Length: 142
Image 1: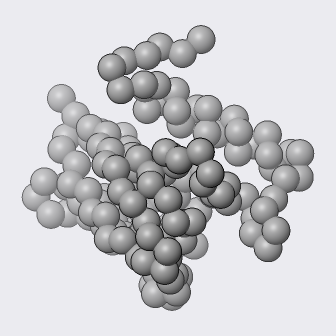
Image 2: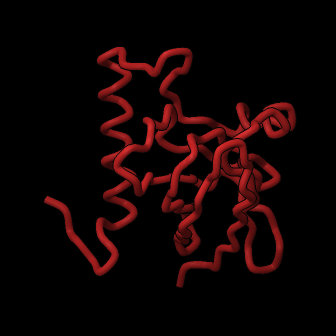
Image 3: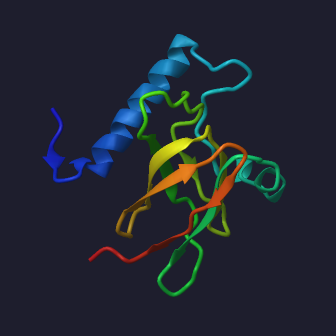
């Protein structure tokens, strides 16, 4: 049973559902051709990886005073019916608060969350062959 608020499922429930789907796909052996279903960690989000994408999202998550947020979870939810599957459920920001994610061209609602801060989300459109910069500034939780 999902609790609903005015904007749909709560972030925690969405993350739980994403984790269940991720692990279910992993155990079933489901992968997209040429790609693995993984959750990226800080180690995979290196400077080399950051410069290689040609389409998707790139950005930084920081605090209100400009400090990087390490380990923030980025979750895109495709808003269109014909969006190709995303090979990763979520990624984490690196030690400099950066993330870089190759995604299919589509419109997404992208949320970011990390313990101790209020979650944030924004809608973004990734065009064919475009890398969109999407930065977030998080405020402390009360």
